Image (cartoon, rainbow, N blue to C red; front, side, top):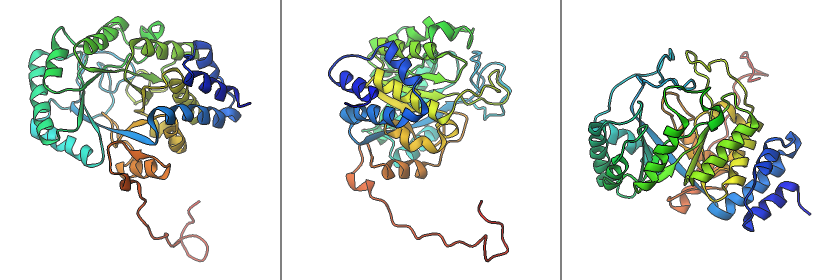
Length: 353
């Protein structure tokens, strides 16, 4: 008989959905059980996505200067984080930035702008960018993330060739008021619903480490299952100096791994994306996380630098995965010469210790 988590995975594969109690059990698993959790969740990941990893690339179209007061966000009203602030990128610069991600293997480009939501003029601007991007790269998926949508805007984006729309619920409804006060949880759900009804694939996820309880993490994930989000980005709080949550450090690498595994058990056939904060919080466990999640962001994020894109691609290859949509021989590892030690014993230089 397998572990309790293997039994849970078998039940999920047989069509019995995981319940809130199952999700809480994953979060509460002893650290000594983590490999059993990963193996069981990894079986679900392989059953639905094989050995592929979907690579996504962010382009921050407009940075900072946001009127919303989301406590976690470096771009929010009142944030003193020393981030880049600029208005809309030109169409040419957008194509240049998106092209870099596509050249690195990205199957989806995410076009993001700060702000409460887009004006109709903003929609005009984005649809023009998308038309040019699709003309140059007809096979790339485009996901827009522009804030709260008004009636008819999702339809306009879909007509222009946008494939998906991202709007994260971020946290549980019961915790939302503690994180942001300038819009409601219902506003966020409404935008995800508008995107879906407008013909866009709904992308919505969460941020872990916002001071929520285990029960609230589970509440948020089951809300995402109820919304039937096709892709679920799992972010880990990056506590930027100058934001209200600057001193909030609640996550460990093993905790993050359990959160990703919980997402896989609850939403076994959905794209689970390792998103912002993975380098900071998963650290050396990032490769293990790939055996649970099937998607990640390549390179940099909106206002923070990510792991070097080449390191991400090597991590994918080294763990036996291939980039979704790539040629299979792209997974071969290029030979490298072993580095010769030039410091430490036998030299006058400080050792690497």
